[in-house]
Length: 326
Image (cartoon, rainbow, N blue to C red; front, side, top):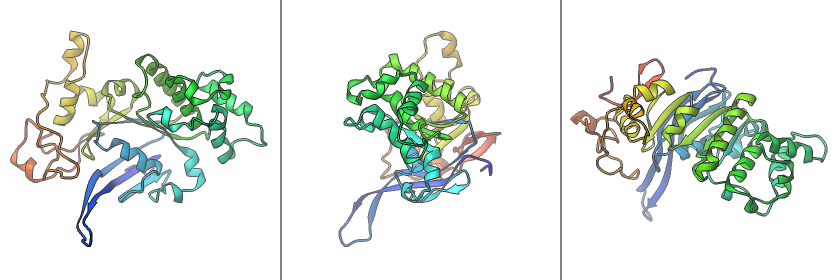
């Protein structure tokens, strides 16, 4: 872990109680996040990728403070913020913001867009006096929406415009770090490009860092500086984007990359050897012994069934959780 990192996540675990028998100490837990560690310097985009149920959104919600960690630490600018949002100073909340997947459910339909955006301006004392109109108009223009949108209500604008409003709201406090929880997956393809281009531009202009949660590996090739793959609550591989796509080392990463659809023979030639998916994803409530991927891995050995591999750095900045990777 770098001492100069903007965000450090250390051995993070988040368990959810699934079942507890009355008058018994026995309980069943879902291991949503199981020993995740990573660090991010300023102005970096880290893509956190995984299938549904891999734990990537739980990592995001725990970092932002919606969940309190079961164990582990989260350090932001060197300050331990593992206590959850209620115990965090306002200065941390100001610098650490989130854009949710579905703007239809994250924006209050009974409040005007002006009311939605001006709320963080007031809470974080970003303006002096009571007139917020000019500040709201400036934030709307920042995301390429006209100032007259402030009079509208979320149900009466399109999904892409609602997500741009969500981004404007997140930018109101002038944060240093944005968590983007699949910000384009609920949108039509026709507007996804505009959202991504806006985020790329804001990152460059405002010198932002992004933790970008997604299941779309193709998107990460063009957006992220580094990519981390999650499987059943653990990071199984993390590397710089170029090396990640050119030299994937974990069998699960190779399986995902070989499944990306392409439109030319040249692109097909750049993909790793096709690995056909096998078996079913185990339940996070009843994880298999050893490596959690061994039930689906085509290269499985007896050691994989018995011993959970540790994360190791095989190349500078390229970490893999696999007994067989070399």
